[in-house]
Image 1: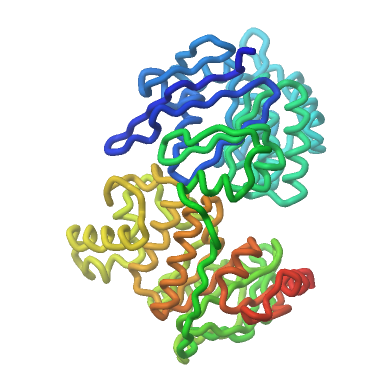
Image 2 (image 1 turned 45 degrees about the vertical axis):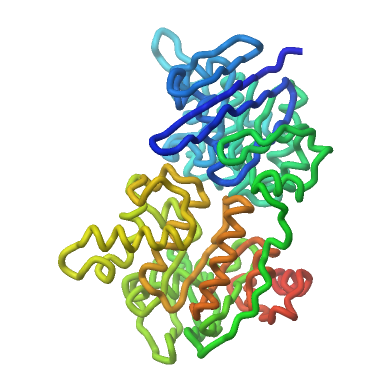
Length: 502
């Protein structure tokens, strides 16, 4: 039987790097095919070749749909061939309605006049098919991220897609939203839609996949039926080595108290009476990793943002750095007293994606690296190169545009930026979100190394194994309040979850 899709010997090069090296992938109608690999393995590049982002002639190899060679020059040509791709960064216009987003550029019309009634009627039908009980005239900006993801799928279905690619579709979804998404994908599969699914979440991969293709360093390692593999085998194929314990066993020696927070309270900016952080106190010592656990909405990120001087709402409480009370009213104040902050959303708050690694790396500590009045490019380059080597950032040079890097390497650039400020305390908010297991291991190793060097680290993570595996001590929040504190020995999944659920 002729496959729905064949990608044969796909090779794609960028200046200084071969991103894809004779990669092969095929997909059948009604098949759920997972594509996995470390960040930088070439997954997204391969999908950009498939979708026409990189037009025919800019890569080597062949794409066949139902046995016929395709030579896509534009994204629209790929869409017309029945290919729809939902990228990790959603492509919706938040100021437009759901219906306007679904049919953007393809609005039903009569003699050049948009048929608004038909557009909203068709959009309502698509939403009903997805069990999405929302008025199609709702602005997308008023939806949660999970609902926006489903609108993207409705947009793909409106194109009568026969081949659907999903790139990390559950990265920002709740468990219930993930289950809703999977129910929809199962229905699409029953209708004969072939799906390529890119995810670092191997539980999801094994729950849904018929076959799994592994990429490593731009090459196809192999394609296997999901039943032939388990998570350990997939991880070893991805990273090229057997993977034992992901979290290294390290015993940290604690020094003096680096930071103390007393009775911190923070209010929601738009609802000044609503407490998001409620009278929280804690200490973190030099050389210690303090994990902060809790369910979504517990106030973990708000706690860090308030301490760092980045919270817009009213707040109260006291912060002491090395025993001295500090008055932090802005991120600059926090940097000046030795606090660094790797934020949850690296692309929005951590990086300037169209700037180089060098420009991003020196952004927060420029005056100390380069001089208070005149910048020194050689000093900046030397500092950036040193931190790139320390963190094993994979890039042709410090002058590489940061937006072209994989997620794991972008995260390393963010961490490097803060290390170049010589912090005493480092906040890590979801430090491994959206990156693969190999990059996670490197970041865990770096966290341990920084703690060994005497840095005090406060880490927020939604992944319970990560909190348990990396932290020396765990503070648990529930609805803004501290409901538990556990040493490494006391911290069990049951204890932490009991405190997290109040």
